[in-house]
Length: 477
Image (cartoon, rainbow, N blue to C red; front, side, top):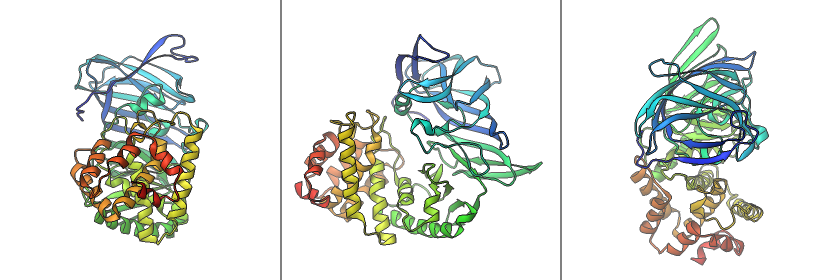
């Protein structure tokens, strides 16, 4: 995949306590991105370990030659061999190391020396053999990363570094690096009783000596790869594949019907997707972290299946399918606010949900309390959340942004602007500036003051503090 702009993260730091780099200045630099991944993994449930091979196609995204590739892997895993595309062994160094800006987070960090300097824009192939044990990262504060190889539930994903991932020893550096899309082929071997799920297309399932190998391939480029594994059952309807735990069949059937209604509404509001709405929904245990992508699949926590009376979380993930590619680097992730807005609208339409007013007031109060307690966000406008690594605030800030917009324009006009914007940008991508221009040009009233205050300043916080109600904020503009 080509990028119009090259991004290079370059930080010079000393890594105290790092076994490999203690006491020396080490560049934390990302020059390359992954464009294709062929992942093979064989899981040993008795030992809680795996053996894998990641064949990775990389591209130099920077404006100068790249001589090495930084990689992160789960802290109880290690690389065992690295080769180039022609099968020649490559030199690499690795050590269990700590993130400089997240001192409780440890990974096996490796640096692979390329066989020749890779010029800007050129590509190369790495074959990375690795093995070890999969453990989570709950102690870092990421309580949803409970990953392990366990008969109840397992998952292979980047969040726990279950396979080699391009990255440096910095949470901020990795977050600010370009998120290039990639295609994939995944070959995962597990005991025959288990099912490997994926948002990709199932190419084949073969069984030998009591072990099943699932082969999936991407139907379109993805931004992440999730491979949950469990005693799944499967429901299919209207292009939707729903992998669910056997005890949740009744909930799964209701979820599938609600998904169909939500897809119909989102299509009516925002227009057709770039392709037929064919995707996978994969149930995961409560607290393990939902995530959505049209080609990579939707992971949805079990609480939704166990009690389908409130499916706002699922509607949130579904609405992300109608996001044009976000080309801001780093992104303020305004789409999270849009998803928060749309999840409430879908709940009102489909379930007759009547809790909007109380919900908005509660979220506004919590947001302001968080801002008051966090000096890092004080004075930072919405547009800069990505640059400052503050996108956790994008959900509530963005939700209020869109609900006040609805108060200014009405639902019909706002949805029409969003529809036009998505249809114009769904293939080429969009930025926060593009959205701002679409709103300014498409609205029937002057939005300049509102957009300035909510996107480029923090004046909106004072407006929210002095509100009678969230709907009343529209009267101020």
